[in-house]
Image 1 (tube, rainbow, N blue to C red):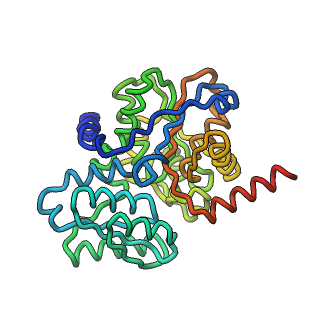
Image 2: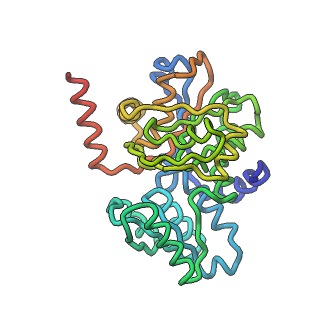
Image 3: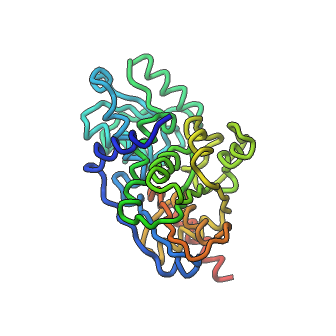
Length: 324
């Protein structure tokens, strides 16, 4: 299992390539939540999400032969852009398989960062199978978006950044998709201060990690349907699951309506454009399901890559709702 020394090694390798996403205190959110709320704006990170730190750490740790041949992976958006940009920095060929229904904006951004984009299939199984095929036929290294120690360690650098800037942190809310982000953050935070509570957040309609923890084994959902598409996984990663059940204190669920309201709040009051997946941590802070009071809380905003059409739809719905 990846450990704290791996996170520390990643920190010294990748920090110089990352944007400094300093914590932002929200007085309004603090009043609403009854706690002191600080936002960790990874939506302002390179390529617009937390995934860059993990991507560049993975590619950094390839051997010379692997770097020479190149890498291949699959993604609908944030991971694609992170791998593309990290590969460009380290001068490694990258091939990204994206589904036919992927956002054209994200496809263009991935190509813009220097990747070769292959459009194939309609679902996650299609793109996974295609990327595996390309890895074999072109002798490229296949990169996983969550089943990799270097990836988890790279994401864990976010935890070190939080504790360096705000060592009195008591609670951290962190989104959960495949689980690599919260795994790395939990490893880093618990090594620095085991008393800090790590709270994972999932949409009610995409709660595979929550279900897995309840049954103490990997659970797979038949259907996931959430506006937080970056968290819409049918099952968590195996490595992240094992770390989460050891280090994460709790996982809470938020509704679609709560996610939308959190996104609009961040845009209106914090002046931050955050995608639905990144807004779940704020949704959880506002709902305060754990009945916390006067705690020093950090909410990780995992990304800000949202299509303008989706943003427009959310804003229209919220305006309509408020006018009723």
